[in-house]
Length: 171
Image 1: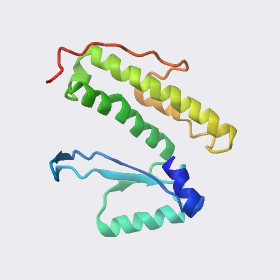
Image 2: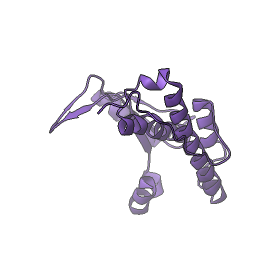
Image 3: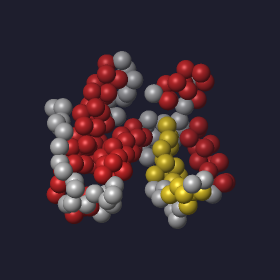
Image 4: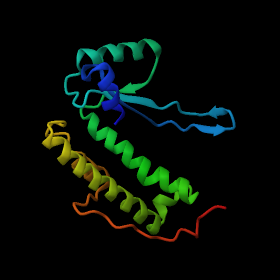
């Protein structure tokens, strides 16, 4: 929605899509600490040949020493980031569970798989809505991208996992 809002003010040609990844920042009162500044992933929806606008931002980032990536399929990256935020980050925050538990516990894995299925279902619906209105190119298929990432996309609306996490819940 933010892109549409910005495009409404500055015009669609002024928009580049962007996410930040790999940042391990922790807030402590009014201070932020990190060991990895991460990188900015940005570009047009499709970047097989980066546009002049993308190349200008790349040059600015190069000059400033900012780490970036311009993927060929920006829409896939945006849905991937959303899936990570919903699937793991939110579950970890709500459950107060460390990230490692999602690699070792079958119940925790089921939770994130359920969350990813929800994102996949929503992505498929967004793609259908946007494709009908001419908003996304045919190859920008978030549901298929999520299926490749998570290994489990569902065409049907997923049900809640309803799993108890008391074994690793930290007070």
